Structure formats: C-alpha cells, structure tokens
Image (cartoon, rainbow, N blue to C red):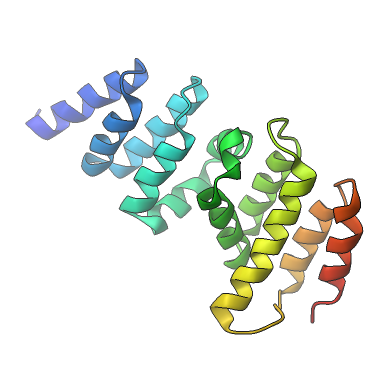
Length: 179
C-alpha cells in the first residue's frame, strides 16, 4: 500500500469517528473525490452538521462531479434538503440550477424534502425557489419573462399546489402566465 492510499484510509477512519470532519473531508476530496463524497453522506447520516462545509468543499473542487454524485444519491438529497442549511443561498442556487438544467427527478425529490422540512417555513421557501428560478433564467438568457418547458412548469406547479397560504395563488398565476 502506498502512502496516498494509507492516508486515504486514515482520513476515512477519522471522518467515521467524527474527528474534524470538514478538514478531513477536504483533504480526502483531494485524494479521492468520490470516496470523500460518500464519507460526507456517511457523516451527515451520523448526525454531523456539515451540510454547508461539505457542499462548499465539493462544489469548489468540481461543480459537475458534485452535481452528478448528488443526483445519484437519494439519501444525500434527503439529508441536505431536510436540514436547516437549505436556507443558504448556495443550496437555493444549486436546486434552481437542477431545475433549469432539467435534472427534474432530483429537483422533485429536493422540493419534496423542502415541503416536509420542519426546520423552515416551506411555504415561503417554495416561493423563494420559484422567484430565484425565474430571476436566474431571465438573467442567464437576458430576457424579461422566463420560458420553461412543460416538465419544468409541471414540476413547479405540482409543488406550488401543495403549499398553503397567500403564496399559492400568486405563484400558480405566475406559472400560468408563462409562454
């Protein structure tokens, strides 16, 4: 076994034991991205509160790999979007990007977790997601009115219809007005 492999296993052991998870994840990420990503999920499942730290580590290292592995991990989607950390703009933008690039199965799971998340006001948060999705689309495409495909509209409509309060009617109207 070479020194790099030995260090990898040492870091896995430290993370598993809850020792300075964020720093050890960062180092492990430099050695083996996928294993580090799996250990992030493991640490979260064991109650370590490193949602944002882990996300920052992986997203900074490789946005594409992070998105790919995140979309493949239903347990991680549940852990991240059931936490209070979802209020962070980075995680809001990550979910909005999933919607805009048509990773709709993953976006659907994340939105479902948001609606059942007791740590946040999910009715207000769904409005934030819709508003940010509209604004991001318009900014990226230099338009005043977004144009979503049918699946994107259906996804947003399905989640809007499940919320309560004054946002529901407003958001449904906004979706209906789209081209």
